[in-house]
Length: 199
Image 1 (spheres, rainbow, N blue to C red):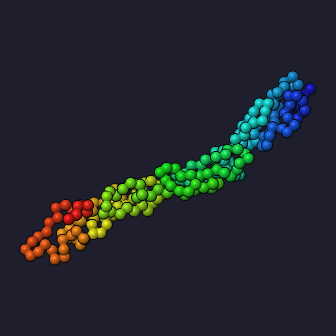
Image 2: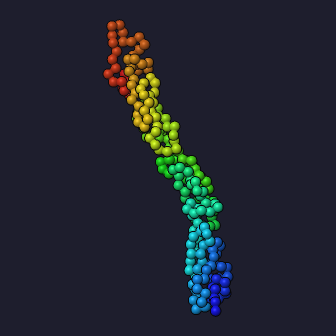
Image 3: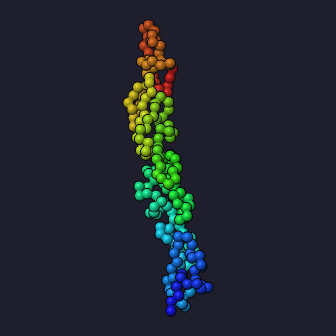
């Protein structure tokens, strides 16, 4: 004799409604003496199982391969996928978010673009008198460039402040020596050519 508790109607059998949505019932031992040993197993790609009862199915669209899941290409560089409602009944709700310290918009059901402008974090070029430029904002790579602001002069530097010089005796600026110089029979000396040291 055979008693498939998933197919029969009996006190120990699966209820008339079955295991539940997106679940399949299995009776591993169909001996009539083996009762209440049926199992509800979640249909793939969801995971989960429950002996003699309806299972709680989990479908993490960030970690599973399915039609609505995160594609193999992922969320994009410097981004992480989260599935706020990891159930088979809630699909296409996974979210791509940028990892700190990058910034960008959270995107539901698709990849996002994250950026990291190193010039906006602190003062990478030091104090005043320099301008910071970061042309590669896709990753934090210390590839920003510092350049001297006029009338300061100096070579641009990558990943560090530039070495800028402002000779107030030779330049034209509000605090510099007037166009006529110091006066007859006089010589101008700027003892500190740091652009932050004026007058």
